[in-house]
Length: 412
Image 1 (cartoon, one colour):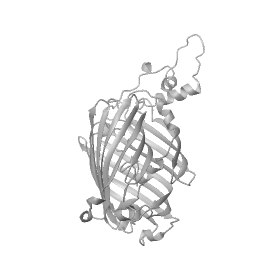
Image 2: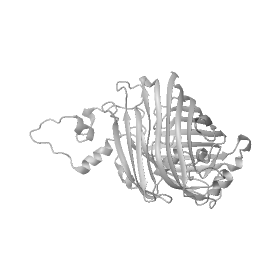
Image 3: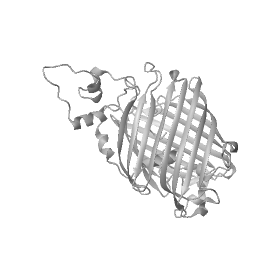
Image 4: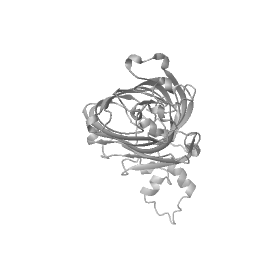
């Protein structure tokens, strides 16, 4: 579901690249340094707002629009979470996708601290996004995480509302591998998920979560692809999970491990029809390989037991994993995927990334077929929009297809 939402950011072009030349500070800095007023440029937005300029015998001239515009992006990666309630920055622009056509997208990224004196943990973060296009596509959503009590408690959350014209190839690898084997429809989605966790040992968390997903398909060209299933489903899930997280920073890790195993129950007695169960495993590792170079590895799997509806099946593709594939073209009860990515700082806040990986979908573990494994590879551009919050522009290649992706934060 998460990958479905983020696909709104996939684009053919965007003039935002013009803004990326405004650079200051390292993209992959290892430390978060609080801003000091006397170290900031005289006309930076932070200095202008916070410091009373001395009277030098005449009225101080306010900088012009273009200088203030440049200063806004130049200083946007300075960590102000110690001095502001929420340090928000905004970026946006047009996009194009062959499916949803021309559109406008906006993302506001914010950093904040519940306890501004505690620098032992990274700041909490929030992203608010919205987009719309000429095809009738629109999406609005919020995602982020919050640390409490020195990081002992943590809440992760995401919610989104989406309407999008899309395609459906059916269920299973064989249905997805034929280009012309599809039907078009409009997908309506509303989803909310909240994870609450408690740290009971260094880096080790246990937690519970709750979610609700409403999915409706309308205006199908051919309903036979659903194999008798309904066009709409509402599913509410309740889960437990165990998580190990030693990453130095959530939004752009340079080192550490992240591993999470969760089991989510969608019982029939709470209104799920039919009821089913979902298991999900994620294992990531990050380390420095040379100056400015970070290697990141990702292993991910999903398996739904029971009769999960077509709207809740595991889907391959999107903007985070198996980049280059049309999200949802391949879907089934199970999914397994792996990828490795090199993230290289090149100059100040500018960097590049290259990745490779593989994945597939399957109906059961006994029916897992290695000949169905699909490749993915690609390259991307990175610009540090805020402190350790990167804008990424990726171009991914899959088997017989490819796509552009524009997004905030690293893919994993």
